[in-house]
Image (cartoon, rainbow, N blue to C red; front, side, top):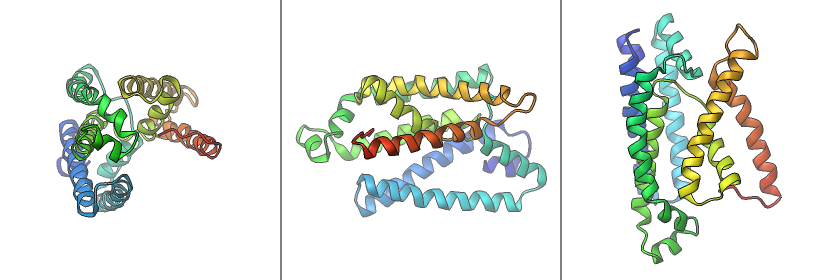
Length: 231
């Protein structure tokens, strides 16, 4: 997004590079804060929220300082769109996502053990700190690759793992590929719905996924109060 302000409208490569740069930067900021306070799930979540507010403020500042055209490009990127994702972009994304996914798949057994708790995982020889570090870095890398050409598409990374666990269970060797497949189906479904529900007006895909994601999380909250634990 910073590339939009700096380089004008010849921006695809600048946007992609910015997505990678700031995704990795954000990951290391969160890990640094979590390491300072102790690497726990709660610390990671609170650190992520703090970093989110920081970058949201920077985004608002960039919009305030930008021209009308630049603000339009930024807002469009926040809405999300598949219109700029052609076959060359898909090839680039696949070449980046596939190796990272395979690396995470090799740690599927360790991730399964981590679900039982840190102490149990350590007693079985799992390096919990390194596993979390690797998971966060590669997940950030995959996320940056997925959104660098499409913009922000909300809720997909949160909805698809929960749906995958409901279908295939919590074992990561099944849950990881199922999450990717379900996420792709949700994105295509939301994009198709956004293009047809108010034709010829196109509703941005990020808006559609937010409308779909919020009710799903209300459903999860209701199920959780009845004893269902998705994570």
